Image (cartoon, rainbow, N blue to C red; front, side):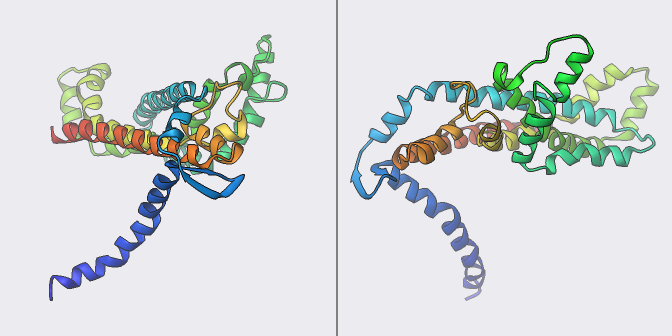
Length: 286
């Protein structure tokens, strides 16, 4: 009887997880193996692996896969390097540090679509954007970033929004450093670069692992910035796996192919998470 009480209390949570995650996954698996188009919603003929073949042989698949990895690794590199630098910069006390911390964290609270609109209209616009005005100020021709450097523009948008998250994690990790160890290193004659190499960077190892794990999972599903600014173009230059699934489902009305792509995205995310968990597990075990 005593064993049944905890299980009974867990039942609502288990059912909620099943309804929210497992049931949609099962429906997606079903749709991936049937011929289902929104233009003929009543027909659900078994289609075998044809949906997967159609999705993987689509001309946009390889560019989308490449763009997904380029976007993900570029944003992770920028956020880890710049986040660690900012965390170290504001680690020591100075007047107004609390205000600076709030300002650094603020971009993470902005919705992705709003972030994309701000970058598109206020910063990257080739006529009245901030970058264009700075170029004109230095006598240079303005650059149409979204046309000439579309993927780089998306990387800048996403990096700007995820940089506060990395900075927050690194700031928290730096606060737990042993101050006596730092003081002892200073008394022994270690300069800042030596302290950075032998004390700060090793201490931030676990924080880097956490940032990479969380960012990798979420960056695989970047959509709002692409939809709001470039629409996957020019050509396939900013098309990612997530955006390709959207195109199959809501532009081509092919739910079967979109479901096959969604299963591939789930598999990709799980492989990435498994790889990172092994790396992080080894890191945390040290």
